[in-house]
Length: 354
Image (cartoon, rainbow, N blue to C red; front, side, top):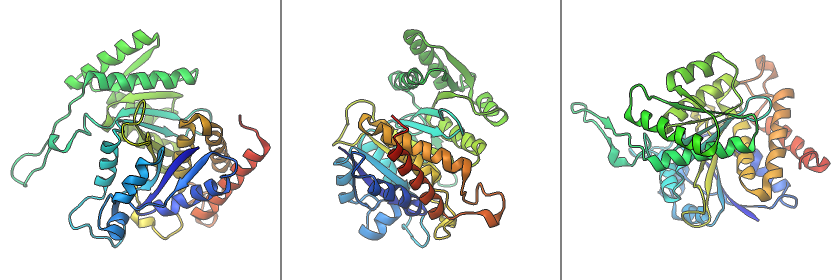
């Protein structure tokens, strides 16, 4: 039995997670997933408990195999007194050593476009690598990449490509300017040689150009953390919406703390302007649930069923405003979620996935 801690979080997090939570409840007799929560975090944690990451939430995450998160960030009407709610997510990543990010961008057919990047290091280094300015003195951000961490990213990219024949591996860097980029390219080449696979090298600006100008490739792109953050949003935009991208922050190997091996979430953030409008697209939350389920062998079939249900909904509708052709055809968050849930239950009932 896989235990999942449900953290809806802030902004539209609770709205987009309601559908996946209802699906998990409806399938609890068929799918070996046990859900705990909901647990407060971020701005909602501060409102409920006076803490961005309440102790009971952290304990629930330690006691779970994975975390399903809605969003952490700004929430309408909540004043954090100068704190940043995103610190809760950063602290969760550090606590569980979730140092690898895997993002999937829906492509409309076949495998998604996948990004593998580092999370704890490089541009996402510890607080003491980031020096704030007082408005007079300079600010600085130190980027440090360790060879073993780059190797880890490269091996995960190779593993993913091996599981999905026909997938191209692209390594994106800034080797013509940064020492970290030259190290990245060297390590990526060494891993490729050792694994007997081909890695295509791209400078990050060229990679961005190709993603913007061409159809999204059947590929896994390995790159430094901040580059992957930007490129995955660009790819989601090419797919049609930021809601078409899921994010997993994972620890490779056995859990570093408790049972938790990863946090799975959509990438769209809290979108405070959409709170309460029923216009938020819940697809990213379903893609996050699918990625979580596919991470574990016991629930992989369920993950594939969720992806098939999303594919059907994306091709047939109904759609939220980011995809509706005219405002009159726009469906609510709840209507889209209900359609995906019905399709997923039908898929599980007919047994068309294995």
